[in-house]
Length: 540
Image (tube, rainbow, N blue to C red; front, side, top):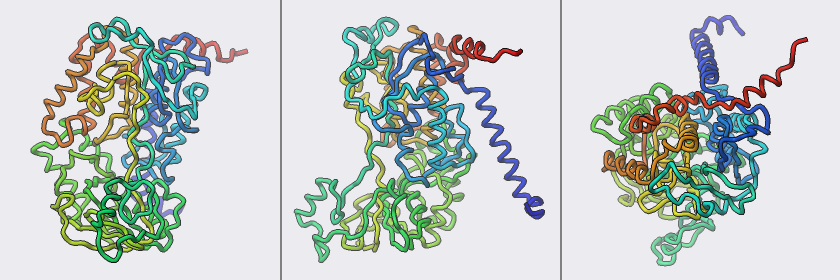
C-alpha cells in the first residue's frame, strides 16, 4: 500500500467503519444467536413438531429458531435448493438497504454493507446446515394439501387453551404436526404482463380484445415487436451490448434493470413507468429514521420527510419526485445512482400508459407528473432492441389449505399481527401476507414471530381466541381508517415493533415470555448442553 493511501482520511474512515461493522455483528451473534443442535438426531425429545412450507430465507430462519429451542421441524420445498426468491434473481441483485437491517437470523455474518445474491445465498445455506436442517428438508415436494387431523381444533372459538389443531401435509407421510408455518413469501413465478404487439403467450384477455376491436389504429396495427423480450430476472444471460433497452416497470427491479443493462453495454435505456416510486438514499441512518415513523401511514407532517428525501436524492431532477403518492403509502426503492443516471441522459424516464409495441418500438400515451394513469393525451414512440419486463412476480396462492382459515375480511394482509390466521393461532404466515412497508421483510421479526408461535404451543394460557385475533385486526383498521390501500397493506418497521410490544402489554400473562419472544433468551434444551459437555475431549 502506498504511503499517500495510508495518509488518506478516507482510507482511515473506511477502515474504522469496517472494524465497527464487523464488531457490531459479532456482538449481535454473541448476544442473540440461539444454540444449534449438536447433531442431526437432536432434539431427541421435541416439545412439538412444526411443518414449514418454503425453504427460502424466511423458512430457513424460522426452522433454525424452532429447532434451536427444542422443536422438531420438516421443511417442504417445491424446488431443488434452498434460497427462495434469492435463488431465482440475477447475480447482480443485492440488498437495497444496509445489511445490518437485513439480519434474517442472529448468526448471519455479512462481509459488506450491501451484499449481492451469491453472498446472501451462501449465508442462507450456512444457517441451513449449521442448524441441522438438511436432513429435515423435503426438496422437490409440492404441498398440495394441508388439513386438520379430524376431531382436533374443535373448541378454538371458545377455549384456545384446550384442544388444539393438529395438521397433516399431503398424504401424511411425515406424520402429524402441531403447527404450520407458511413462508412462501409474496414472489412466485415471474409475472409477464402482455401488451398488444408483444410476442407473449401470457397476454391478458383485455389486450386480445383490444386488438380484435381494432382499438389500436395506424400502420403498426398487427405488427409484432421483433427484438428480444425478457423478464428482469433473466438479465444474467442477456446480451445487451450496443442495444437500446426498453424497461417496463419503475419499481426496484426496474431500477436494478437499468443499472444492469448499462453495465452490460447497453447504449441507452427507456423506463416506462405506470406509477411513480419514491427513491430513498442508501443511508442506514436516514432509512432507519424513515422506518421509525410509528403510524404506518401518511400523516400531516409526513411532507417533512418527503422534502428531505427530495432535497437529498432528487437534486437537479425535481420532475422525478412523485406527486400523487406519499412516502408512507408504498414501498420505496432504495438507491443512490438511478436519479443521476436519468440526469446524465443514459436513461429516459417516461410516465405513461403503453398503447402497443411495433416492430422496433413502443407507443406510449405520455402523462405529466400530476396526471393519473389513463389521463395522458400525447402519444410518442420510443425505439428499442430489447424489452425488459420489470413487472415483478405472481403472488403465491394458498389453495393447499383445506380448511377455511382466511374468511372474507380476514384474508391477507388482514391477519392477526399481520401474520397469524384469525381462525387458528397454529397457522403462521411469516412474510407471506406482506404487501408494502418501509423497513424489511428479512430482519429480526422472523425470529420473533416464530417464538410467539412456540409460546402458543408451550403455554395454553397465552393463546388468543379467533374473536381476540379478529378484534385486533378490526382495531388496527379503525385506527388506520382512510389509509391508502387498507390499514394493513402498508406498515413501517416501528409500527411492527409497536404491535409486537403491545402483544405483551395488553395480556399481562404474556410478560413472563417477553425476553424469550423479543430477544430469544431462554428455553434452551438441556439435552443440547449435555451433548456438548460430554462430547468435549477429556484431558490426558
